[in-house]
Length: 113
Image (cartoon, rainbow, N blue to C red; front, top):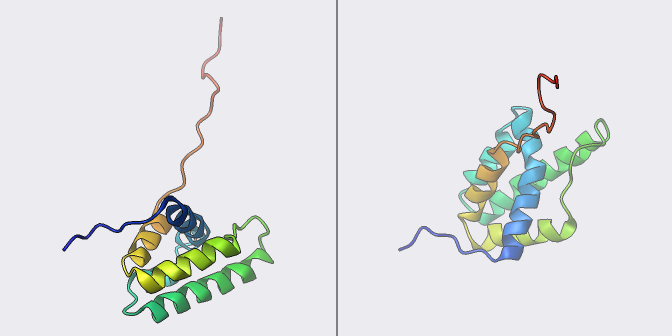
């Protein structure tokens, strides 16, 4: 038995997009939604946790319009994955908990000629 999860490039893109949105909760130290997705005992529980997280994100957008919301297509793909591939919830949660890439400055410190 292999622990490898096989995802198409389109499925990976969808998981990354939804994880990007869920990262808001990790940054705010509100891990409940992410944990519920990762720890779900059934696909229905994982999908319900995702729905609750998306509802909370939608509410946050009214206070902070810069919050990222995933596309409907990506959400559909992730729901299908959560329903068919149990490990996809763990992948989604792990990516949501990852840090954003830090922007590097191209300025040179010090100056002088």
